[in-house]
Amino acid sequence: MEKTLSIVTLGCFRNRYDSEVAARRFLDKSSRLLPVDKLSRKNKADILLINTCGFIDPAKIESIEAINEAIELKRQKKVRKIYVFGCLVQRFEQELKKHFPEIDKWWGIEEFSRDYQDRLASKNPVEFLKICEGCINNCSYCAIPLIKGPLISRPAQEVLKEVKKLDKAGVKELNIIGQDITGWGKDLSKRQGLAGLLKQVVRGTKKIGWIRLIYTHPKHITGSLIDLIAKEERICNYIDLPIQHINKRILKLMNRKTSPEDIISLIKKIRKKIPNCAIRTSVIVGFPGETESEFNQLLDFIKEIKFEKLGVFTYSQEEGTKAARFPGQIHHMTKKKRKRRIMEAQRKIAAENLERFIGQEITVLVLEKRQGFYIGRTQHDAPEVDGVVFIKRRKLNIGCFVKVKVTDSLEYDLVAN
Image (cartoon, rainbow, N blue to C red; front, side):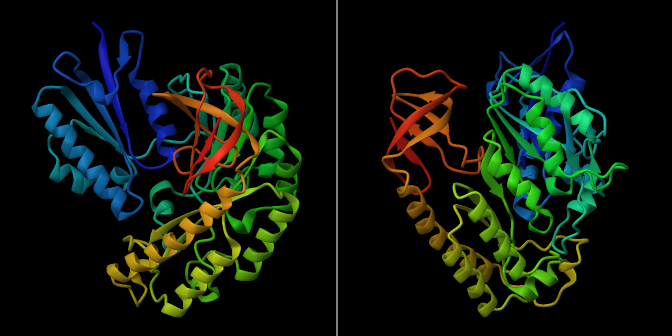
């Protein structure tokens, strides 16, 4: 008798990867994966998997809401069993068990093996590849080490096994992910760096058109990595570079192990070596003790540097972290106000950055068709977090690269034909 499985994945790209690993264990020849939005009286899931996120408060709330919604589906007999796992469970399993006795099974994070792990096959032209888990940085505000533990790198030969499989399957864009991929290899007996691994990935693939790097710590970006991105056409001119702040005192309190001078020098080096590079950064506002002057220093820096992409987080006081015990915790309304001011500035910067593309011919990966137009992305836009290109064409093939001419720009998106 056929069994059905549905999956809800919350949080980051890394969680999606873990969901695919978990799903592989539950699917066999007599099983079928059923999208959550297809659950009805006719379509019922034997098992509903929920992969939770517990990184910051908004993510925890979203995970709790998903659990409550799943329990309601179970009451309506659209779901037979609910299994919940992931980061939130890793941190708060006992508390969750007390609050949600309706859940049939709990477990924490998926174990990250140094060996290649088979995962749910996908026909998506865009794929993610996790090369490491855990972190070596121990930022004072971050709960990741409490959840994921120390760094675990997958050896190059094991990474290449999966890369070649994805290449053979026709994947067009490969996003290389980890808590901090610039830490890759530092825990292996044969010390290797990310640049060396990427050279092997490029040599070992033929069909993958874009290789994108997601989360590179400013402290660990090397000159050889910058040179490789500049030289290798298939590695996207896109660097995900979370600076978190620019004030010297705040950076030290955050334990970022870098300085304002180092950050400025690195950005200058990237823009000199890779003139066509899109730099995405993220910053945290409202860190304990952050003064109005220190915030303004960050805001002025953002206006001066004009990052192509930027995300803003309000500081979240995560239990068990060093920063949670720092004096000077800032009121939530002040944090919201500071976030709004940065986003207002970045909105203008992003619009100005995109205006320069008008009239240019660019390469776009076509992702989906809507009524009357297609949606794609450039190499300067990561999936789900950055902008898209709206393409006015009658006939295009999904999952293919095409040349288009930009006719207009919006705040975060482009229009082309």
